[in-house]
Image (cartoon, rainbow, N blue to C red):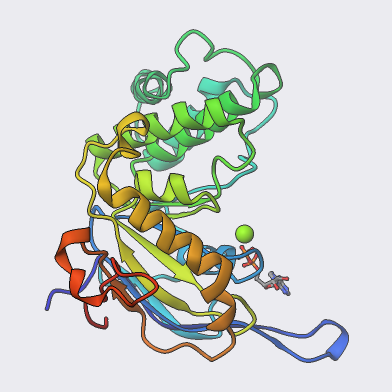
Length: 299
Ligand code: ADP
Ligand code: MG
């Protein structure tokens, strides 16, 4: 079988206990493969280790055990091949929106002329709908606009992989919706591989090819990888009408409310791949609490 683009193998993270106390095993046995161009979201309760996993993939933190390989190379330290978008986009406050993007573009292609850098940065400023406001400083932009600058900056360096840690968590619902649409648009053009953390199940269903479900920490693990087989292009208006939507949504909510606790702290077995079947595909199992759920083998 082909190796996945991103290979997470037996990842474990232990933080030393404060003041010599008990060490904290945040997660363990995390083994996940992400295909090139795949959009994967991660859901799990606060503190289960989502950000820590993302930081390890980004090369900002080391795993205690296990490996991450991207494109066949082990991840060691940060790389311009991996763009990171945090909730609190760290823009340079003294630079304009455009200059913030240009700064990143220059570091990616140091040999480019100023005009080349500018034109390239401007393309991404336009893509996120900020044309006309490119000369404003971050303090003169709304939270949503600042987040767009962060997205433009991450996309502009054309990383092979995008890592996003609750990128829209701080935005109001309306702005979030618009930026989700833009993100889907850019992603469908650029075809990047995406690993995104969100606490919003609707957002995860809208965006993902697969959703990874993490049990509660400590000793968290990725219990399931839920396939989202809703055809693309998707949009927020029609998504709710698709028969799969509520099946997947119910499954995710049930996991968060109930199963993430029940499964927590068991050290984690292999991640189960879950493909929810259509209502008429498995009527024979009507006694099950979730008659529409069908597990499609291990991983
Ligand atoms: P999530 O993003 O899922 O909310 P985090 O990855 O931020 O969770 O944190 C997971 C656990 O690891 C939490 O219990 C947190 O307190 C702990 N943790 C995170 N970073 C550190 C650190 N640098 N030192 C010690 N403990 C940490
Ligand atoms: Mg986090």
